[in-house]
Length: 262
Ligand SMILES: [Zn+2]
Image 1 (cartoon, rainbow, N blue to C red):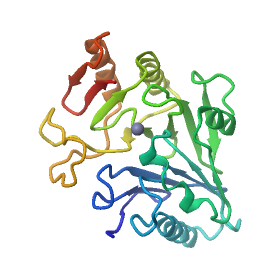
Image 2: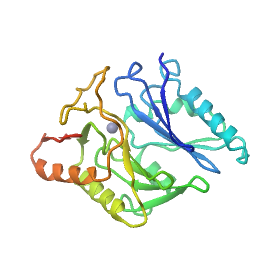
Image 3: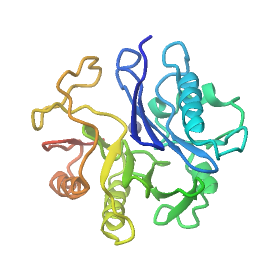
Image 4: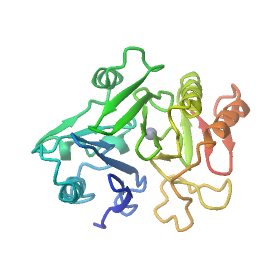
């Protein structure tokens, strides 16, 4: 077992990558701490703690943050476990956190996601989710997968975009919904209330050679692109959708992603 890759993106925000050696998908997970609760986005590609030590990692990071924030005294400190979407490599670790004290697991069907976050108009609506002096906007995002959402963290300006937008394959399962989601994210980005600084998706598959992608199953990616993408990438995705048109199985290669119609 190799250790997960931990990056503190801010004093209250952690990026955790499941190591490639444990699963070629090597998904990224994000842990956001607030005054009243923490939010974990995704649980990784395995339910075996010996393969990827999810529970121990979350416990250790939480203890570290609580030591630095002694004024937060609710015990057990609540954790909400939500998902970018319901594909296996993002939810497989749920059972490892199921019995954890103070932990709430959000279900993975569209109905469960809609009811937990309180969407009245899915997927058009954006709903607020409070972590306590820290607000995350939850944006409906089906198209890659029916229960997909994006999370915008106002504190860091990061839009967590799951598998919808990332430096890798953008697999479009429902073309109309996916396009509507990209247009929704562009409207959100362009609203004056939400300064989106960057997007962070759930995988990296592109190499640093423009348009060259590591094929599925690759374990060693020595020249991969960084995870973060600039907000303008959303316009590039929309133009790639235009280029794909109605052609079934279309594949549009861009510098930092490859759009694939499924
Ligand atoms: Zn996916």
